[in-house]
Each structure stands twice: as structure tokens, then as C-alpha cells.
Amino acid sequence: MIKVGIIGAGRIGRVHSESITKYVKGAEIKAISDVRVTEELKEWAKGMGIPNVYEDYKLILQDPEIDAVLVCSSTNTHAPISIEAAQAGKHIFCEKPIDADVGRIQQVLAEVEKAGVKFQVGFNRRFDHNFKAIKDAVVNGDIGEPHVIRVTSRDPDAPPIEYVKVSGGMFFDMTIHDFDMVRYLSGSEVTEVYAAGGVLVNPEIGKAGDIDTAVITLKLANGAIAVIDNSRKAVYGYDQRAEVFGSKGAIQTANDTPSTAILSNVNGVIAEKPKYFFLERYMQSFADEMACFVDSVVNDKPTLVNGNDGLQPVLIAIAAKKSLDEGRPVKLSEVA
Image 1 (cartoon, rainbow, N blue to C red):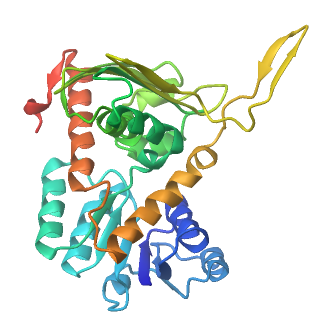
Image 2 (spheres, rainbow, N blue to C red):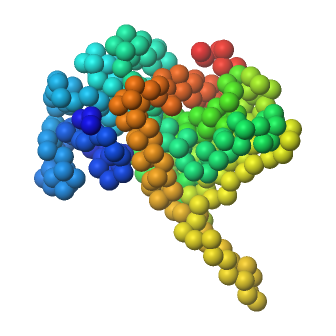
């Protein structure tokens, strides 16, 4: 049984807390920290069986009983806290992205290697049942050599403007999951990126310096081509689909829905809309990724989403932003 400390008690920190408490064997949470400790947070932690709530995350890093930490704080703190955790000898689960700066990511990975601790990045969609089925089919050779990878990712509604202003931009906040998914499903690295984007959902997003709609084309080292399409607002729900087309066939997934019931009558054929919220859609994947991390620590296994898996999507996001700004394809070698 390992003891875990969670740094950051926002939405994702609480999701991981619930995963460990309810679904993950072999770990227990000893402490959680947040920059703002409220009575509500204390009551919630008590209900989750978490004995310690701190404002100072360093108390978690200084606790010799804590084996591993989850870095779920604001994005700009991921890298420095991960470095401190590695230096304290703690195994690390770090939410995406590690950082928007490649140099700082490399510093994190160097400290992790020096300390000899486990490091896993929070790309939970790799653990989703639908996308894993596609991956398994590709690995098994069921569709032959991959030729075209398509990833559709559309949110049910745009985030608040205040969030947009500090998110780092859609490519780093939203599309980064899709960049990782292209690598995961294809089994290959991205070599070139061309991005086209616009502001079609909310003009305030444009005023904040971001986009809300995009199509990104990626060339891969194995010769395949990938296409990602994103929107901040799909009025019918959380649209998450993928397809890999290859030399021997194709495999694709549909959206998860509350039920598979289809009503057919004189008015038409009516099916359920996709699940609306990302926690509905991906809750099981959050639990599975946490179980994987704990298993890596307890049984001394390599993590399934390692530091390089955290670095590569950031490089792709940087190239995508450069492509959007300059209106041209950008090779990864230009930003690596």
C-alpha cells in the first residue's frame, strides 16, 4: 500500500481523489493541498477519508511517508512542483501539459531521470475503452499499415472567457489531447503540422487572442496522414470520435451515449445525443490511468504515458500555433 499526496484540489484533483478512494487498490491518500483551503474543502476531504489538508504543498513533499504525488495544480506550476517532487524522491503523476516551454519540460525530465522516480503524464484518453480498442486493432495488424488517422474532438460549450485568457490557447488546452491521440493510435511521430483556425463560436474568444474552431493536418514519420477537427461548441453534446484507415481496412468509434436505444416511428429515426460532460464520458479512463500509475509504482514497472509522451504533444502544439500564425506548414524540427 503506497501513500499519496495530491497537490491541487480543483476539479481534476478531486476527480483523481475519488478514483483512488473508490476504484484503485494499493494506494491511499494521506494529504491534499490547495492554495485556498476553505471549510468546504475540509469537509469534502473529511468525507473522502483524507486526513490532512494543507495550504503549503511543500508539507506533502516533506512527508517521508508519502511515496507519490499527483500534480493537479495550475498549469504554470506543473514543472516547478514536478522538479521539487523529483528532488524529494517522490514518484510523480503530472497533469497535462507539463509546461508550455520545452526547456522547462526538459529540466523536469532530467530531474526525474536523475532521481530515478516514476513519472506519468495525465493523458487519460489513452485509457478510454473506445480509443484503446482502436489502438489494439492497429497493433494487432487488423487494418494493416495505417494510412489516415482522423480525430474529432468538439466540446459541448465554450469555456468561460476568464479561463480562455489563462489557458495557454486551444492547442495547448484542448487539442493537446488530440495530438497525443494521433501519436497513440498511429504508433508514429509527427513530422509536420499545418493548422487552420478561426473564431466562429464566440467573438470574445478572438478578443482574448485565441481561436475556437480548427482543423489540423499532420504528417507522420511512417508516411501516414492525420486530420484533427476541433470546435469549442457542439450543440448536441461532447463529440469524441476517431478512425484509423489502413491498407487492410478501417476501424472507427462512435460517441458514447446514455443508452443505445433508437426510436423509429413515422416522424423519423431518433437516437440519444452524446454524453454532455467530459467527466461523464471519461470517468472510467481517469480511474484506469490512476490504477496504472499506482501499479507502476508498487510493482516497479515503466509508466505507460512517460515524459516523452508529455513532451511531444507540446512540440506539436507549438508547431500548430506557429503554423496558424504564419499560414504555412511547420516541421517539428523547427521547434524541437
